[in-house]
Length: 137
Image (cartoon, rainbow, N blue to C red):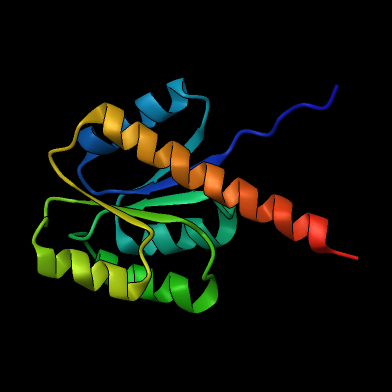
């Protein structure tokens, strides 16, 4: 029987207590999780580790989350990105959507809702990859 590879999630979050809580809860759900605490680390880990999902804060040291999102979308239109931010204004959500975010959740957030959103984004990516493989000649 073939082993199922754990889905990889990169959390780009500078508040260590939030990042650790997210890592713990996602690990319990069976995900492989890495943390980046600033924008530069986030871009480096995204490029080197190739995660299946990115959870992204907006207010980060070095490079802000919107700039990270723009950079990622220039190189990869398909990777799911969930913004998780204290900036919950409509204008910030609209900006995120214009830059290509897949989902946006404001802090403070409900853990169950967060985990369900993550699960849905991972499932959509899995469906996309499966469809892509089936269409190859």
